[in-house]
Amino acid sequence: ITSCARASNSPEALKWFNEAASKGVGVDGVCFNAVIDSLAKSKRVEEAEAWLRKMTEQNLQPGEDTFNTMIAAFAGQGKMDSAEVWLQRMIACNLRPNVRSYNLILNGFAELQRPKDVLKWMENMVKAGVQPQLVTYNTVIKAFVKAKEPEEAKKWFHHMQQSGVVPNVMTYTSIATLAARAGDAESVRKLMQEMASKGVMPDAVTFGCWIQAHGQARNLAGAIQVLQERMPVAGVKPTAFTYLLLFRYCCTRARRYPDEAEMLLRKMVAAGIPPHDEVKKVLKPVFGDAKLNALWSELRLPDPPSSQRRRPKFGDGADKK
Image 1 (cartoon, rainbow, N blue to C red):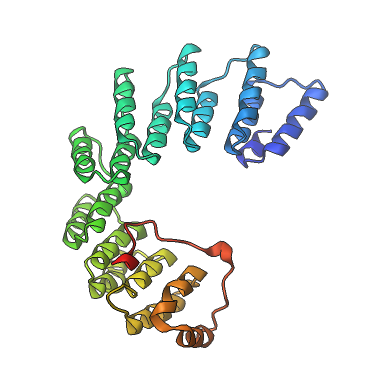
Image 2 (cartoon, rainbow, N blue to C red):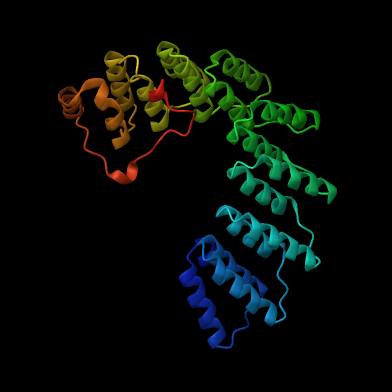
């Protein structure tokens, strides 16, 4: 049952639970928790709630993990009223919400771009004697980044360090996103230097911020330099997203850059990264149908399945520049 639940296979978990019960095999709280967890992860939250009621009817006490599962299920769907209710139910059952309980609530509000609610629950967390951790601070910063409140995000970035919490790559990437949106490549570079001085390794997403900062400033050469020089020195390999971001800056309203786009496409293929269909859509206005199809044929690129479609997650869109 537990194995099926871990694989998010709720039908199999339910089948084995019912089979165990029909044969008189004792099913304990662990089995109930596994079923509830699998249902919640499958977004079948109403059924998960029903199973939780069954559990209590058999005088089995749900634990912190069970309540956290329900909080996560509702928070993941943006149903924060229900998520808050489950945290209160947890307290009513004489269980103390832990750092994960609060982080789930914070993240739910962060995803909804409701930073005031994030701060309210962080205050509740501290009042309850639960110490904020790295994930907590990252979530608060993310909330303000998503809400496009850069000064508040930076304030919490400094506050976490004053509290003795060391930023990780996710923290720095969130702050770099703010500079990227503003086209401030120099600030991203300084953040990269700070990361290096503290032993924090950037990843492809962090470098994507640097590329975006150059792109937003209409500096395609600077963006390409990040790919060709900065990433290799750091030992970070570009991803399909890295190239898609660059391709978008090869096609702005002001100008097209076919030579640079062709060089990047060849480099992408040589690196063993198959272009997905979004790449072809972005490159179409750069080359035109005839040239693009000729390149696709020369590089022996098949038309990719639509399931491989991806879009950049950063900023305001290079094609709007």
